[in-house]
Length: 478
Ligand code: ADP
Ligand code: ZN
Ligand code: MG
Image (cartoon, rainbow, N blue to C red; front, side):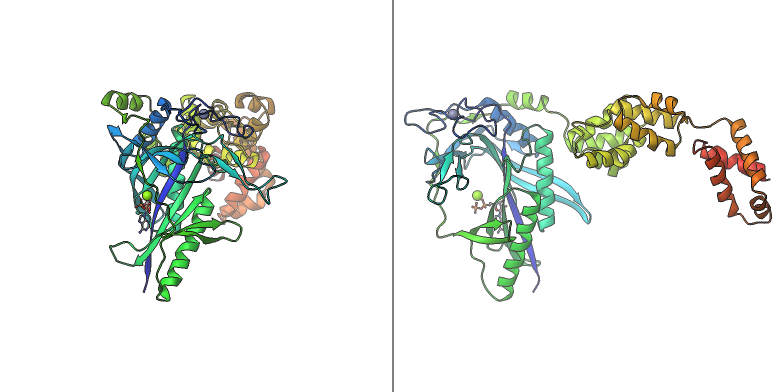
């Protein structure tokens, strides 16, 4: 029997507001423990939450980008459970009436297009952080840092539309790119601003009903997500292959050993006793609010990719690469606006520029060569002032200096030799010194032509226009 994997993700993304979702405490990461806290986020008796308007707008922005319907009315609910990092004994979340519903994300895999449904996007608050390690008495005590308690999150729930670990990792990558692009989330997975739970089950190939799933909690890298899913799919395949049954449970991924281990079974699962949050009114999102968020939204990656193809005539492959991040797309357009042809800019960005940026461990948020200076270099090549080989040399100097390409070319005397007279003189000299090759060529040994071109280019120190050298050499040999 062959099995098909079925995967759905639940992604938690921190919203980039300055303050928490129900109080005015800062959301800045890395402050000393328990310095960004107040009676509200610590859950003191008698305090009342006040909803952060910016958090709702970020949530709406994300929902629109994911193609969701933003619900006119959504409702906060209390999700009750007891854990030391949850000061109120409940988390304020949304339950049966989420902020937004029914969207989709599309992306391409080598063997075809994928469409993954988005079930819902809802708002909630984060919990605090338990510190199990790093203190002298950590063998006996756990400390709690509440700075994170009350930080605004959206939870994005996908439909069980994913069929492989690689697809799931790509989907999560796309989701991250969209959220970061929009400024909704900072994409920092090490700091926990973006994390994901993966639900996975197997079913006989061709079946239409879903199998029993296991949920792997808190995966905070694309690699861990893929590894955890690969392991989990194999584990379930072995159990089913041996005639066993999958237990519905929550599991944890141990990144050191690469295995998932059971955390709790369905029987031990929490009964969250959800009920509507009595201290917060429903969230109302009218047409005007929706229109305002939409108007303030920048072009989405997919829209920009399509525009790059339509407006600049770029191949789709280039457009996909250039819209991987906002910085990349902005850089490209800045170079084009500075007067360089689009395809040439794209080639340099994906080639030499990408290489030096990678070597320097930097992103285009902080480029080694400004788009204007790259455009200057590309323009010199287009105009025929600079040969391709020389251009690479000039590029190296763009990286290490602040000079514009034009000045480097002048100073170093790297101008392409375009003047026919000069090239003809070089050719005459080379032919005079290579009588054998010339005789060979005239006797039909055409392979010596390439040798002679090489000699002329060498004599020109690589600066002669190769096209002209070819044409003029042919003429000289007939
Ligand atoms: P639960 O009630 O256990 O939270 P949900 O129906 O809310 O389950 O779904 C949570 C996530 O699990 C969603 O992303 C959904 O797509 C996914 N999911 C649901 N059922 C399955 C299944 N049988 N196999 C894989 N993923 C599933
Ligand atoms: Zn607070
Ligand atoms: Mg659920």
